[in-house]
Image (cartoon, rainbow, N blue to C red; front, side):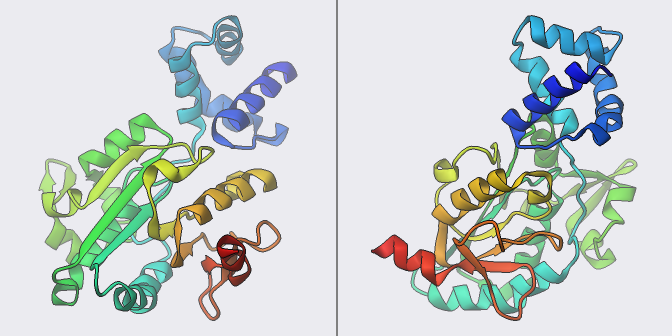
Length: 278
C-alpha cells in the first residue's frame, strides 16, 4: 500500500470513528479492506482509495469504516463486571430508586449484541428481586450491519460456547438449524440504535449504568477524553461506568474516579459533581 493511501485511510478512520491506525497496522487495512474493494468492483485497495478520493461516496466510506471496526465480543466477557453489577452496583441503585423503580443501562459499542443480551439475562435471572422494576437497556454501535445482526439475536455454535453458561443456553436460546436464536423475552429487553461515540450522547438520554468496555483502547488521548466527557454528561451522579480491564480514566479526565475496591468500575468524581452544581 502506498504511504499516501495509508495516510488517507488513517485520517478517514480517525475522523469518522476515532480509530487510530499506525503504519504498523497497514497489514490490517489490507486484510479487512480487500473484501470491501471487491464489493465495489475494484481490484485493489489502491483503487478503492482512488475512488474515495474521486468522489465522497457515503456508503463506500461507511463500508470502509465498518470493515475496520473491531467487532470482537462474547457473552459475559470477563464475568467480573457482571458479578459486580448484580452483587454491588445494582442493589445500591435499586435502593436509591425505590420510588421510581426505573433504571437505564447503556451498552456502548455493543457489537453483535452479546454484552446487552448478557445484561438482560442477568436481570432476568434475578427473578422476584426485580419484580415491578423497569429496566431499559439501550445498545449502540457505529456499524449499521452489526446492529442489524444484533437485533436478530442469532449466533453460531462457536459464539454461544464463548462465555455463555450451558444453563443459560438451554433456558434462553432455541436451536435453529446450525444456529442458536435468543428468546424473544430477552431480545425485546434491548433497544438497538446506530450511534457514533464521537458524537455527544445527549440524544440517548440519561443513564444510571454505562458499559463502555474495550473501546477506549482504540482511541488517542483527546478522543478518549471526549468520549468520557460525553458519558459523564449523561450519567447519573450515583451511577456506574464499566470499562475494560486494560482501560482507565486516570490521566485522561477528572470527570470520573475509581470506585474503591472495584477494579474497572468508575463513578462521577466528587470534584466534577461539585463543579456541575456550582
